[in-house]
Amino acid sequence: MMHITAFIEGALVAALVSFFTSRLIVVTQNWHGALSLDCDLAGKQKFHTVPVPRVGGLALMLGMVCGFAWIRFLHADVVPEEVMSGALWMSLSALPVFMIGLIEDATKKVSVRARLFFTAGGAMLAAWAVGAVMPRVDLWLIDDLLAYAPAAIAVTVFAVVGVTNSVNIIDGFNGIAASTVVVMLAGMALLGWQAGDALIVNLSLLGMGAALGFLLVNYPRGKLFMGDGGAYVLGFWCAEVAVLAIRRNASIDAWQVLAIYAYPVIEVLYSIYRKKMVRRMSPAIPDRLHLHMLVYRRFICQKVARRATQPWMRNAAVVLVIAPWTMLFTAAAVILGPGMSALFLVAAQVGVYMVFYTRLVRGHWCFDPKVMLGLAPEARGNPA
Image 1 (tube, helix red, strand yellow):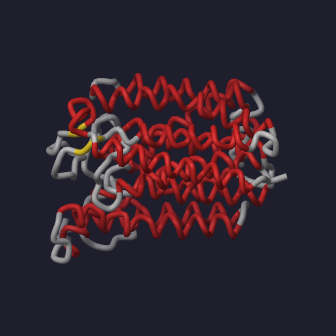
Image 2: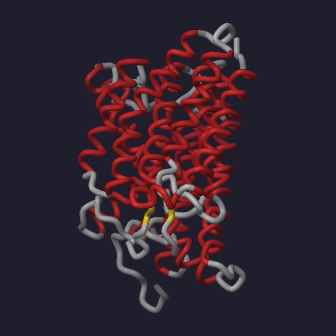
Image 3: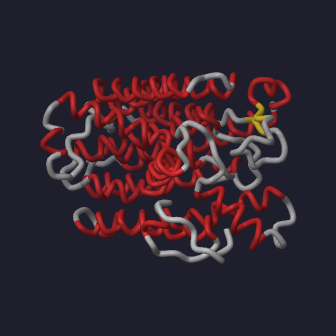
């Protein structure tokens, strides 16, 4: 039986706690600013003009924990123990991922390798505690390989680490990461509802509520950043919800989930490809060529700057370009269902991404795959 009222209450508690904790962090920043403020205004991936606290992950984690506690202690008589146990272990699995991100936010000295290690550790804990292991990816041969536990765990860890970092990568402008997570988890909640999976609905609504509460402070003026701690915990939460949804429900396939998660996943995969194969540099080195950065520099600043009299207005405008994409394709993935339609939606999003990315980089429309992949030089006479 789906106790949706209890889950909605938990989501509302998560949202309220996240919102008020976010506000508290903002109004007390003079006390903790030495540790919490992002004062780097000149970095390659920095687009804010004043120091801003980057410990919004505290609000996000606390919101999800309090939302879970509300359900656990006020609705334990109606919510199945499996749901409560699953949510508890999910929170515990997310804790090391959150902590390593928060330490990076405070010290700026945590290596990429350490962050990957802790994220992988969280994924392995979830695999052991709640069985969050990919049983299939709906690809011939690979599904046969996943029948072997070591291969399945390795693929799961890789996928969880990838999705976790993808949310961190898109966290570049006010509202983008949080709104994307809200949309993705809304899609997963609907898939869980369709499948009758109370655990997926509960986990999705908890993460969605916490992200929404933070979003109300982060957007539009960027008073608080989620930081690595927030991006990692939300990305990890989304990744584990996806793994559990596929494992627990035969009616949900990997392509349908990927159609919902496509924007950040495409961003991280293309970022690795662009840096490694095209620019011949380490994928860990930051640059200013992510899609949201190009939207800001090549579209917002050039086409909308006259109407945006304040820097925060230009910053906030980026999400108005990105969010419709995620909402449209998430709705389509839920409505059209699994199978070939989901595969088509993934392919369509790859195409949309590549076409618009090439347009922003090269200054002209181009549909040549070699040019879009950076394998052919730019045509002469076209503006960069």
